[in-house]
Amino acid sequence: MHIDTATIKQYFLGLQANIVTALEAFDGHGFLSDSWERPGGGGGTSRVLEEGIFFERGGVNFSHVFGQSMPPSATAHRPDLAGRGFEAMGVSLVLHPRNPYCPTVHLNVRFFIAGADTPNPVWWFGGGMDLTPYYPFEEDVRHFHTTCRNAVVPFGGEAEHKRLKDWCDQYFFLKHRNEPRGVGGLFFDDLGADGQRPFEECFGLTRGVGDAFLEAYLPIVDRRRDQAYGERERDFQAYRRGRYVEFNLVFDRGTLFGLQSGGRTESILMSLPPLVKWRYDWTPEAGTPEHRLYAEFLKARDWV
Image (cartoon, rainbow, N blue to C red):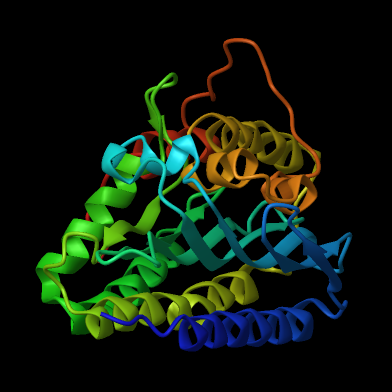
């Protein structure tokens, strides 16, 4: 089967451009555009905003890389692909608002093909989006999950949404702390690799997720952007951001793939928040909003 990678790349570049345009309008500051080349093959364009009016840091990256051998992070659960040439492309974004009442968000949509020049290439899509709030607002989380559901249902019904929602809860989980990174959303990987789903369906689901991002996130931050906060809220935000750092550096497949494949470190690590704190053996005081986040929101729930 011939895979039209040019069409996939065109979609990813368009998605990056559309999201950046919308975020620039929301924030009021422009994104820096930084193109780079990978010595082993390929490159990308990082669109980064630091010290914006609303976003303390945000990045919307496109990358398209290829090489002679799949890196270990990509073959850990697919050892049969070790030694194959690969091509990978996608869009990845992380947004860290300054206001603690506005959640951090992550989106990634990607495509891989292994052994494209062999008689039996293996291709797949992956990605998803997830929300990491610092303060508990049920209507925000329900809006995010409802939008995620609506993006997936046309490509597999309620069962597919449940599968990707549950996968997200399992994936964005800090095993060493026995707690989730946030309130989840969607996650999928190896979509199409087993040869059981048509390419157009897999590409369609991936586009559905990417295209739903702005609708899922912007109404939330538009609702909260002017909510007053103080040093207490910023301090807790910095503490919870530490969990984000831990997950990205220890578990995240995209981060590990980028670093192991010789990607551009500055672009890969733009996902990390600019200000973070760690405390020793801290727990929130009962009855506080911070305690409610832990007790009611940082657990797997049916939000729709």
